[in-house]
Image (cartoon, rainbow, N blue to C red; front, side, top):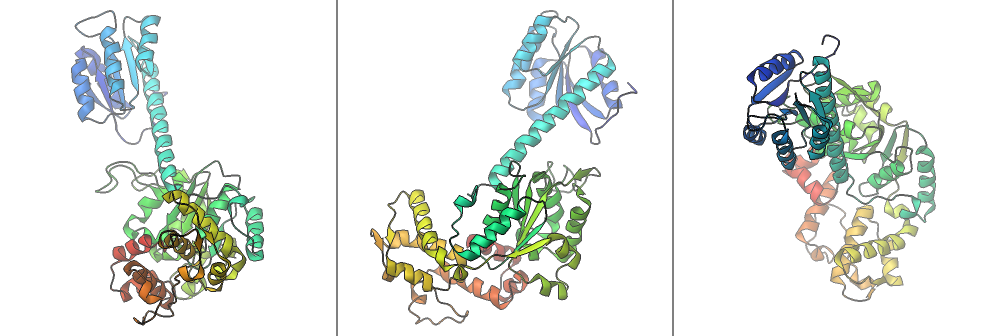
Length: 469
């Protein structure tokens, strides 16, 4: 027994179901030596009731109870009943009347392992530890799979064919990204809002050697400072008041994959040192845990802010900046890639037509010219919204120039008599006010929210609503 190392830091509950109180007492003492807490019952019915109200890591049950002391039928039925609860809890069965037939039938009913009485301490402890470790591994894999499906719900291009890039400036950029994808170096993407930084970050991941693992995007501006460590590094159950269960952080979710830090400049200055430490040491600890976890991730960051100015104004750490920008690339605005506008517009129309089950209209030459002459302050995102709106406002087979209503807002002092402004919805007015106010305050979220009289949460709700993040 002394040769077995106890790897479990936190107390884990094990349910023991046996009608022999001497067996229960012996198991309690043995399990306590290895950091386990024992819940004990003496009937199959009590075992089921306990599992409905208690959270346990493993069930250790006898195959025979008072009604039948030799056949193992009660134990097999109990295994079936526990399995039917869909709790995904490992089950180890034990009996003094062991036969191969009973062992096989117990496994077929849902048991994970079989121990014969009288047991050897080392054998039963090893069996318990092995089954708990396997169960935790399966739970973590499923949780990561679910979270990654949610995080990658957005449609991202699998290869260059999925990106519209006829312009030379985009062709050059993609060539650079293809080359960088072969490395693990950190990339900093800069440029205006709506230029497609998140799409290009996902593209780099898709064509890199990490493509089989997770691409995990994080909007750094949407994480409250008080939850930064929990969101990024995870926490263990009980680490703080609301920590009712273990939580996997973004670094662990992105293990062996790519972590995309969007809106980089919005990380509070006091949290930047914690992020820097993880990037430098490549390890971190979940909140409430002393166990270090490895951080094998490729980091891609994005911002529309002037980080050099933020460094001068003590809003961003210079050492973190140099850690994240092994190479810095500026994403061109839509007005710099006029050659792509026609194909992008038609692509958006086709996408929204499929989404809403409508016929896809064509775009007249005059309409294309109007789109190309517009300066697109909202970039690709604004073009996408424009085409989605046109699909419903222009109920014809061809979209003409006069069907297109574009927004021309030079400041947030609007002229109510302006023709184009009169066509805006309330949401469009609010969105454009936020966009223009962001420009005035150099994309500083705190100052923008203050100038609009919004709370931090109210501001980020609108940022998310209008897809300005």
